[in-house]
View (cartoon, one colour):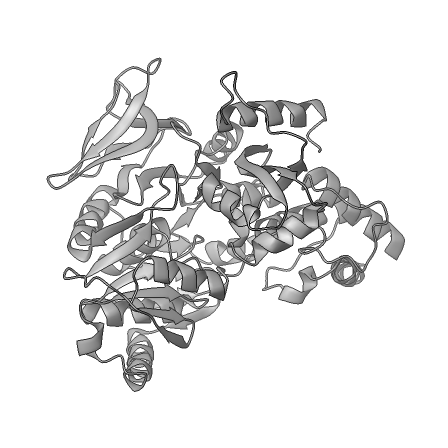
Length: 427
Length: 86
């Protein structure tokens, strides 16, 4: 399935990709991972190199195995824990193989991801390749992109948006995806500027940066997802002639809807053909978006409505999930890590307001032992990928509770965000 | 712009634009990630502010990771770019 691919300044022909795939396959066989072993087993993958990631993905998919993709900058120990808890048989961490005691066999070759569930631990979502193939097909039908429109992927290849919508749909329609891992926004623009026709896959924060650096830079087409673009940014890009597109989805479903000509930041267009969407038809009374297919019903926990023109508008969430520029963080997961520090009596993690990326992770901590902010961050760094580490930490005597004495993240969120505003945006 | 002004400028950006707490004894030895809490997303944003505030042009090429190690290494990076554009 892999044709050509570009990564940063390197370009790989399909022959080169075959060669890389073959050499990694040999490596795996040498490690004892023959096709027989791969079949029906679950592999956790954490890789810096997207090339290696894609090659392993191909090998395991072809071998009838299943995959759990872990965000590239997750620490080794955390990968191990995640892989164990998920019942993986193996962890492939860059070039290293770790054998684990996987329990269940996966008869359908699948992609396993963590959902941004609401409470407790992240939930495992299993999507068969069959299901993903249908998404790819219907996505391309709606996108109707030309082969010579270069998809430029600025988002991680471990998430559905980058992997399925960005990379796999490109392979399917014969386009060459250009994956950018370098994080210099000026480098992004150099790459984008190198293609007359492009579709840039990114999150609002990245478009914000590029627009700040070069307000006159025109995107032939940009595809934003994960969180709504800021109203101002949306209008500015619209005015400078950029072609804005937006898509909406979740881990359970992949891409749900796609808008080629959105009216505003919340307009996510028409649902993909295999979905029936249930939600409100009134902008003033949005309700939960429920995505149905012939095989499943997913309650997205997002509020939305259909416009008169049949476009799906997506608003805020029903729960406490924190949206850090499109990457979702479950508060309890961060709370659990903070609580491992000695002397922590209580901690609540919530979505703190951030001027640029909308939300960041905030934490209130009651501790018997004296810590400074850096110590807590350092501790979190050892267990969590960067985007989950609290950006705003405050030590308090007591966590504010509701009248009934319960913890309410939305209460804390509004209290804390009021505080920040009062102090002129500074802590 | 001398070295002290550059470090002062960085302190201002990190405090006011990135909204992070900075110690009163802000120095070149501070590590951006461990001591100041500048993560990889913020590092990207830092590039935008560095261009604006120091009136320099950050190159379009890959930036070596160690540029972001400490306040001092960032100041080196800015100094070099200022010399290049002078």
